[in-house]
Length: 499
Ligand SMILES: *Cc1c(COP(=O)(O)O)cnc(C)c1O
Image (cartoon, rainbow, N blue to C red; front, side):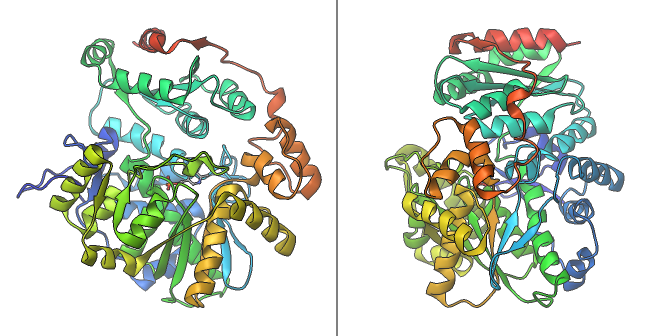
């Protein structure tokens, strides 16, 4: 199977193997990698997944896309990524809320949020990709984080072969729990550095290093190639297809549906990666009805799916579901290239970067609306949903999941759709404990470390292992620096491990 760029409109498109796509991250024309064709599966394929474990299911889906990896390589990656020590309580368990509403819990990994589903396996795929492409240099992953992605990347890349990782976070921009999580990170190939400044300072610093040819040359001389753990990398997207198959297989296993019956998924959306993976599953032949794209108050996607106009020229809102506070959903480009074709996609992306907006044709919107609809939840509705689902069903959800559950319920009642709808649950309620606690009608705790205990005392739900006892962990990284020193810090780190 070959990969092409979403922006390649030449007659004979440039083709890449999956290992190359994973190593490169972004195509040289600025586009994202997509498979040249979508593998098609049968009902027998779906039923064959039913008796399998999650890592076995993952291997069966991944081998359809990563055809240049050997059977043994994929098995090893899946088994090492999705094991019971990292994912306590299952990799992607389904919880029944009502007869027609389910929750797909994707947060049982080492950072209690769904980014682990991809970031636990992607570094293993990258390590193999480096060997397969005969790369002799060490890859150094640079990450600027506002908190959660940095920790998930550190957990994923720690001890990955042939790779080192360095994470920058803003001193003023992360919570106490997030700071402790990163400062206590284990692993011999990791480094963490705080920046005096905000997230933009950290991100601009990393971007400047990536675009500095002189820096790349210096790194290269030391046998180091810079790389990113960006969410638009195909290696982060492809593992996300797996859990839609796994959810369907679990519904079959429990006799909740029969083979071929369609199921809806409602996904709390930011960068459009998670929901796009569901769309690929549908294109492969998984019986999916509607994909409900759930947004918070940053509802650019709701407007796009209603009017066909994508317009980022609006106020950025800081919400209680911060991982969805995004005005440019990068992975939407992949959907556009499938539906509208490469020529239009290039024009739309150029208009987005110049004017911050574009509008797709009515017939393309109609095609998209056959599968996708967009709904959103305000801050009040999000909090109300947490309270209501806890009080009526005894089920505690986080602020992101609440956006999805609110949208799922709204969709089911508006459209009178009797199909089973699965709300995708992307974070443990403990990951956003202070806002979840406040949503239950209590005063919001000022310290998010206290919020963990308060929420546990109130609900009796267990604190997941990644957050339990965090205050007493050994702190390894206490270093802070000014943004202008970032290149110097990276070079010093390179000197500490370069051969
Ligand atoms: C990243 C994230 C999302 C958004 O997922 P996308 O793939 O960017 O759409 C939703 N919820 C949580 C908790 C996240 O961390």
